[in-house]
Length: 368
Ligand SMILES: *Cc1c(COP(=O)(O)O)cnc(C)c1O
Image 1 (tube, helix red, strand yellow):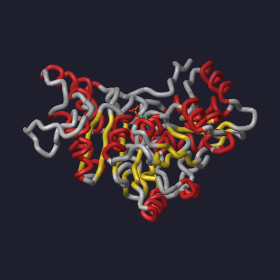
Image 2 (image 1 turned 180 degrees about the vertical axis):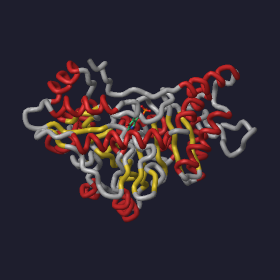
Image 3 (image 1 turned 90 degrees about the vertical axis):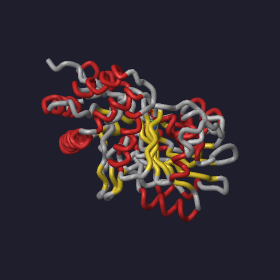
Image 4 (image 1 turned 135 degrees about the vertical axis):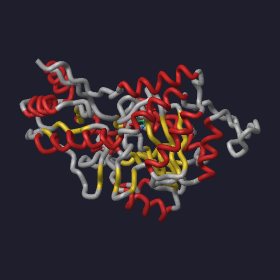
C-alpha cells in the first residue's frame, strides 16, 4: 500500500531547521541581518538590483501597487484565472480590476484579448505566470509600451521560471514572489518584491516599515502612513537555506513534470502545452478534465485511492464579491477561465516524490 500522497508538501531539511535554530538562539527575531543577506542572495539569483522581503505574497502585490501610485479612478488589467489575491489587492488600493480571459493551453492571460480591455483609465497590467509558466512577456511588454502603461508581474508561483534567458519577475517594472508552503521554497508566510527601479524600491521599503524614510538610514523620519510588512529574521534564515538548493529543487520538479507530460494519457484529460523557449518552475501540474470526468468526483476518487488533488486557482470574476460588485456572467464573459476553475485539477508535484509515487499517480490517473 502507498501512503497518502498529499497535494503539496514542503521540503524542510535538517540544515534548514539548524539555520532557524541559530537565529532563535541569537535573540534577534525581527527584520535584521538575515533578511538583508537573503535580499542580496535573491537579487543576485534573479539578476535584479533590488529585492525587498515582506510578510507574504499578497503584501508584496499590495505595496507594489501603492508604490506605483495606483488608486481610486485607475484600472488594472489582470487575468480572470489566478489566485484571488491578484484581484483583491487591486480592490484594496481602491482601483478597479479589469479581467481578461486566459488560454486553456497555458492557463495564462490570452494576449490577443488584452488590448480590448485597455481604456483611458488603465494604469497597469498585473501579469501572472500561472502555475510557474511565464506569460508571453515580449508581446505584453509591446502592448504596455504602446499604451504607456506599467507592467507588473505576479510571479508568486514562478521563482526560477524563465522566458529565454530572463527570469520571471525580473522583466516588469516590479515583480512579486510568494513563499507560502505551496510554493517551491517557503518561510511559512513570506514574500519578495524585485525591481530595477531604485525609487520604487525605496518607496516599498518605506511602506514596509511604518512609512520611515528609507533613504536616510539612522534618521527616524516618517514620510507617509506606512504599514508593518517586515519579514522576521528566522523566516529569512529558513528561506535562505532552501534558496541554496533551488536549482536542484527545480530540476527535480521539471523531471517529474516531464514524466507527467509524457505518460499521462487519458482521452478526457487535457494536458497543458509547453511553448518553446519557456522554462517553467512547475509550482503546480494542472490539467483540464473533459467528457465524463467531473471535478468533484475525480477529486473524491483520487482521494480514496490515496492521492490529494484539488482545483488549481479561481475564476476570480465568478467569486461572489466580484460577481456581485461588477455583475459578471463569468461562464459567458470568461469561458476559458471558467472551465479552468470548474474542470481544472492540480496534481501533486514536489521534489520529495519518488519515482514509484510518480508512477502510482500516473497509473491511477490513466485508469480513471
Ligand atoms: C500564492 C499566490 C499569491 C499570494 O501569496 P501569499 O504569499 O499566499 O499571500 C498571489 N498570487 C498568486 C498567483 C499566487 O499563486
